[in-house]
Image (cartoon, rainbow, N blue to C red; front, side, top):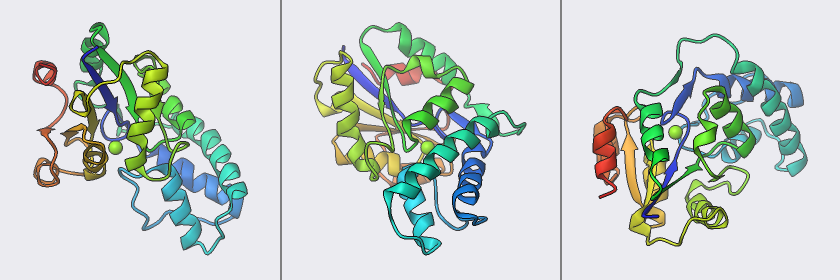
Length: 227
Ligand SMILES: [Mg+2]
């Protein structure tokens, strides 16, 4: 095993056509009878838990875990439905399936997730696109509110699933926002940024990504990173 590769989901592997955002809004309406609770709250690159806490604060609601658990359960319910709704921007990102097939075939690469989604919503989103099966495990919003804390958790989980301990430069984080890059940097991992989300190539370069791709269509160039 020479590398552990940790993939972000939204904007990196897939776009859900806004299904995640719609499901969050509907869950908040169910639990608190408040519409548009997430308006003005930034979402890309953040954990769902920190987004929910911001929405609760914005609505003047106290931070208690009871409502968050109820909200999360309603979110999963609505997400499963919202993923089935027609939307032109509900897609697998270009080159992703080919890249995952190529990485999955190698026995020196361990594939896992590092995402701000909850584990259940990550599974719902990726199963919808038949991508869940590529990943052995992951770190999720269930594990920490701060994305930068997720990488060590992802590595602990990878170890439980048979990955060896590797030096940080053999851990690659693939994501679409400066927050993904910061998360890699916080643990000394390599950041591969892909400009298929809200940030363009220049922005991702400027925030210190080790490598920036326009998209993930050049499988050979990605594999060359593995030496
Ligand atoms: Mg993302």
